[in-house]
Amino acid sequence: MEARFRSEIDQEDKALRALEQAHSSGARGSGTPIRIARMHEARGRRDDASKILREALARSPDDKPLHSAMAHHLMKLEQPDFDTVADHLRRSFTMGDRAFEQRFDLAQLLFLRGAIEDCRNLFADIDERAPDEFRKMTPRSDNVFTALLPSYRGTITSLKPSYAFIRSAAYISDIFGHRSMSDVDSFDDLSIGEEVTFRLRFNRSRPTAVDIQPGR
Image 1 (cartoon, rainbow, N blue to C red):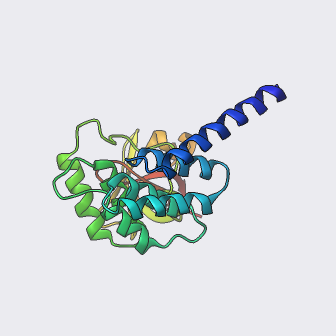
Image 2: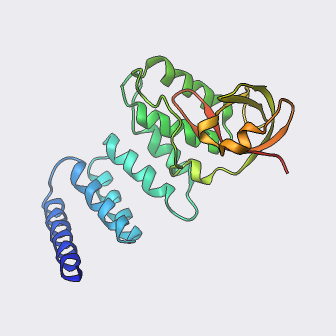
């Protein structure tokens, strides 16, 4: 087992060296530097990942996938600079294109920064133009944006067997939460008018409540 592990590590190191050589020789496209950066990140070498992405952007300052990759890389730092992240995300798509994943990332960042109206407008654009299957469901785990969101408080305004709506200062309109995204025993004990705590994740059109718990 140990020998197999060492062999896999050796193969990954060889692949990394080959990619770095290709990048140094001026290989075109963003795929190579993005792969190199991800391999460095997986090894905990964040400075090396930053360096390779900066070099690639210096070569190709209008490359949209590179801007998206840099935004995600910066969000993993201990204290991300949200202004810089926002700049890279805005440069990861152009007006009228089909880069909905990049718009989705920016909408989440806008919420994180408290720009709720801009966030709602961008989600509305995504919901109107994206393919039907795009981000229909609330994800079951956090991403680099939602992991930084706090817990919120609110009040149950509508309650059905499989879902609830919560009124909260966190968002402009009532927030939908599905039973499957919370502890079912806690959800089944909820009642209209009850104060709750919850966390937020996002689907294609809005924030949604997860981990709904009776307020304490």
